[in-house]
Image 1: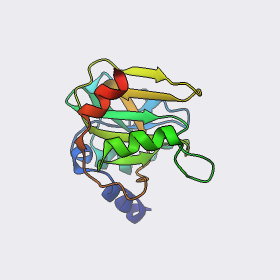
Image 2: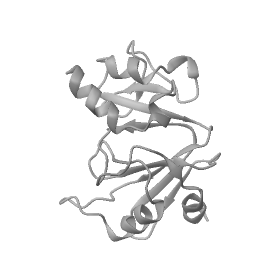
Image 3: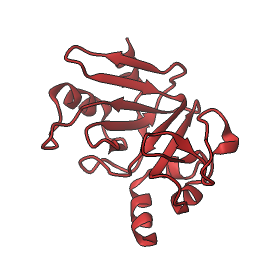
Amino acid sequence: MASHRAAKASNLPDELTTRDRWVRRSATKVPLTTAGKAASSTDPRTWTSHQEAASSMVGVGLGFVLNGDGIACIDLDHALTPDGSLEPWAEDIVEAAGATYTEVSASGQGLHIFGYANVRQGRRIRREGGYAVEVYGDGRFIAMTSQRFRGAPSTLADISALVEQITA
């Protein structure tokens, strides 16, 4: 089990694993402390290191907290078809993001694109066709899977232009 976790950790960017902004999460995506109590995406006292969170058996997985320091996440709901192909609208966004850490979401149907961008006010944008794009940079936690999408790199890139395009 420990070697499996170590392998998963290597999929994650150092820019994330070196920050003490990790929580555990429940099956319903509720943030938890490693002691099993409620965690908060706005209270650093409830966060911990990646190593401690990854070693905990509380809940079903990990979460990373966005705290306004310039790391942002673009969450693409229902971006993947049942066969794992990208929906055409999502293909455009993933291509525009470039070489940055992207992982498959916990549902197996979405993507999380991480990168650097100044996002103070999170937004959920409904698009024609019923899909949603969410952009967050502060006061949120993201349920992490460490399942890199299509060999995405384990580094973060500047996604500011993409965030501006999406939120315009």
